[in-house]
Image (tube, rainbow, N blue to C red):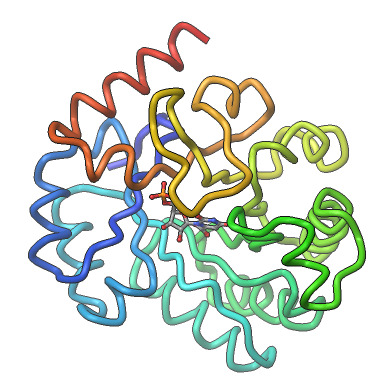
Length: 233
Ligand SMILES: O=C(O)c1cc(=O)[nH]c(=O)n1[C@@H]1O[C@H](COP(=O)(O)O)[C@@H](O)[C@H]1O
């Protein structure tokens, strides 16, 4: 089932049962789901089959970062399981991203391939500690431009960079933005955050929302609140 909603709900759970319990409270016509490292490492591909069976499109967020041949193989494996979107780390470089994109093309796989730029949990001092002297924005722009040049469909970035990315990379280049927090929600471990409506206004094409929905006492009500905020602009 395809949805026009920009919302991607992060199923960050420790077991398949817990993830499916949440999926059963959500509606595949109103959101997509994201499966990340913890859930996938625990459940394996079963989770993808179960979510696809419930009609959800799935973003498999394993953030591959390895030598080109290994990443190309992993991206192919993900796409062959029918996921809607898969990601790699742009810091893996041109040859890695091109190999992944070419592998999808060779096998006529239509899964969206996007690249993580700078994690939304990172600030400038975190970048400096790993030897990146550029500002966060400069580093995001550098990696996003490289990802676009390698033929990727878009990037994961914070909504704080989405506006400049829209100017540089255009509307069609996907800007998938985590670090989304309704005004009343806690920031948790996120650093570069925005409200859902501001993130869309800034040029995000998709919003990744985890805890503000999955930890809410009524997740569907929390999702409806976000939809209402988005409709009001
Ligand atoms: O690739 C991601 O999805 C991602 C990239 C990033 O820079 N920051 C980030 O938070 N994420 C993911 O987005 C989700 C955010 O969840 P919440 O902070 O609970 O809304 C988590 O599953 C993260 O793994």
